[in-house]
Image 1: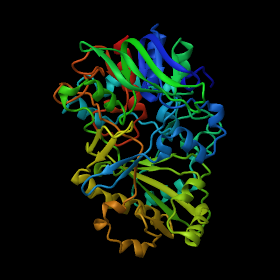
Image 2: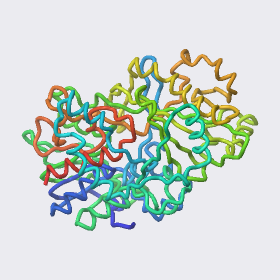
Image 3: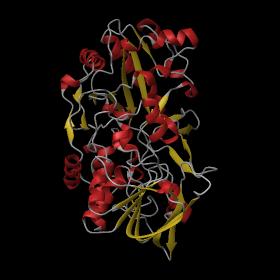
Image 4: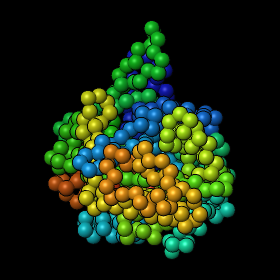
Length: 506
């Protein structure tokens, strides 16, 4: 769906703008707030650091081009492991639409046991299942959340489900924000059919239709403050190909209210630079990541795991162990780059891709991440895994391998750097409890909690309505608000909380 965007890179010199509400970031949280405030009659301006890549262009991009154009750092962002913690590859979007355009479209409501923890132990009494249900329903209608039919499961997912059933694990269908999906397995890398209902297909067009203006290529580096009140933002325009007559200038926005929705990596930096939330001592702390581990399995038969929905089924049978197993696949070209070995060995292994199935396991982790200022624009993020979470890693790997072997896999490829494929007997001899953290291959798509909400300034950055403690007219509306790990994909949670923030602002 096409919508108008002001491309900052086309503007020479400085830009000065006025609005009622300025929103920093156009991802899942920022897009929701932009649409709802604009539809309420407010003059809304959205500033996005990344470029605008129209859906018509995204549909034509190869996975490698998609990585280069809309993923932050080409998908190479990391959280540096501290102590006996693995370094974690953290993937995020950097374009109009934010990380919404690089997700696998998986949609979970916040689990009831998590909400019970928030409303009970954390004292966030307004955040119950019944009070958030209307927000969940509103979001799910807006982005077309639907259940993945069983016939759209890839053969790899079917084989994993067969193994899971033999071991007594229950597999359930995933729900995703799709419309007209034909199961081509490209969700994370740009749906060629425009079937993924990311915010560039849903909330951002609504915002523009209601009068909001979106600027791309605008890097906000300062929130303007006066007497404890947010009065706007300042930053610079990112020139894509500046020529002799094109000078990338500054952008200054005067606004009645500021909403920061730059994501869990960058929202804390903006708050820190202007001193907002400083008294809490919590800005940039308490980040959770859902550390995730993939498992490849090779079957004698051709699996062709790219045929079917990229993510279609999951199991919460191990939820009591802090583990959720979720189906996935990645395009063959990307998968080939992750295969072990060098030279002819790597070529031989890559040739096995049609026989590979993939599944993933994510941990419901404790808050171990910290966001600090780096030497440049990007933050320096560290992650110290809780002792209990670190102890769960061998179990995550064992469980997924056992399921695949029960399904008839000939060998598995554990998420251990340099580890070749192993048979069931060889796997049983692996000393998983003593694998050095530096050899663990770990990823995350869910950074959360670095500007978390709470009931007091001493324990949180914002109140339950997303307003930053000790300031006026400054709000947060992205994943950094989420007070604890969820144990499931956070897209719907982020959007529901953003809906609540926007409604409190009206």
